[in-house]
Amino acid sequence: MANTWNPVVLWALKDGPRRPVRLRREIGGIRTKVLTETLHRLTYHGLIARDCFREAPPRVEYRLTELGRSLLGPIEAFGAWAYRHGDEVLAAQEAAEELSG
Image (cartoon, rainbow, N blue to C red; front, side, top):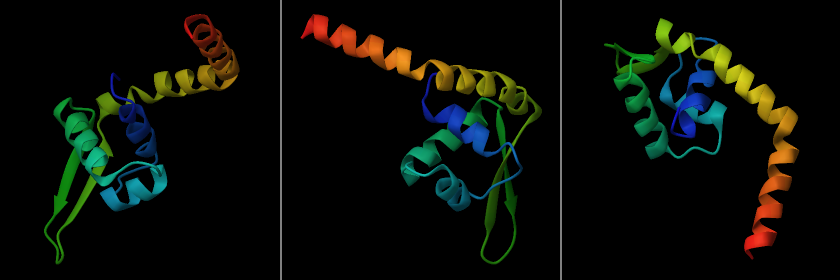
C-alpha cells in the first residue's frame, strides 16, 4: 500500500465491478492518468482483475480479486484509526514544523 491511491481504489471496488469513468467519479479528486496507473499497478499485483467486454463500444470493468478483497479489513481498520487519531497526527506535524521553522 505504498501508493496513496491504492487503498482508495481498492475500497471503491468493494461493492462490485466498476468502469474507470465511474471509479473516477466516485473517488473524486483523482486525475485520469493517476487512476490508470493505479489500476495497472493493482492488476499487476493481483489485487484487481480487468474484464473486457466485446461490445460496441468496447467496455472494460475492474473488480477485486480474492487477494484484493482480503485487504478490505485492514484498509477499513486503518481508516478508522486515521479518523480517530487524525487531529493528533496534525498536531504532531504542526509541533514538528514549529521546532524546525
